[in-house]
Image 1: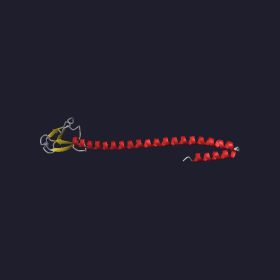
Image 2 (image 1 turned 45 degrees about the vertical axis):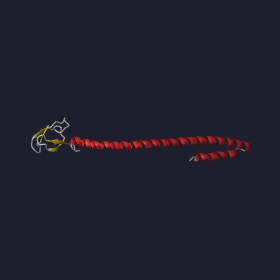
Image 3 (image 1 turned 135 degrees about the vertical axis):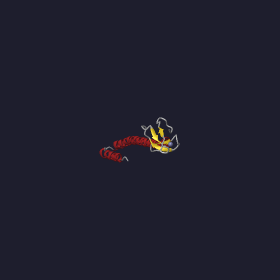
Image 4 (image 1 turned 90 degrees about the horizontal axis):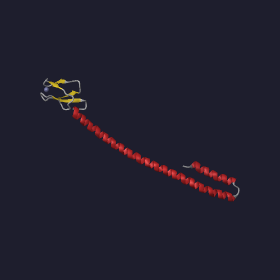
Length: 139
Ligand SMILES: [Zn+2]
């Protein structure tokens, strides 16, 4: 994972060994470098841990969001189904037709919704039925 850094450290030690002739000085500087490297690695590990923790937290949040999306989706589906029932209840069926009951002969038939239409002819008894679109009930 830290290949480049490890190589650089090896090179660093090799350079010191090649260039410092006094064995006492070399021993001291190698010892001192070791302390520095320990700190550097410890900091890198802390950063890596923090990053892993952050990723874990993100995955948890993502899972939570996915769960909420699922819930929302099933609620939407529920609403959609109930809306269908509601539309059928109001308009007779989902094709935007209106259920009419003739007040003269009680014959039931479907009519396309056309709010400009104010009266229609009953197909059964041929009486003229007046339409009132402001009234939600069959008229
Ligand atoms: Zn009729």
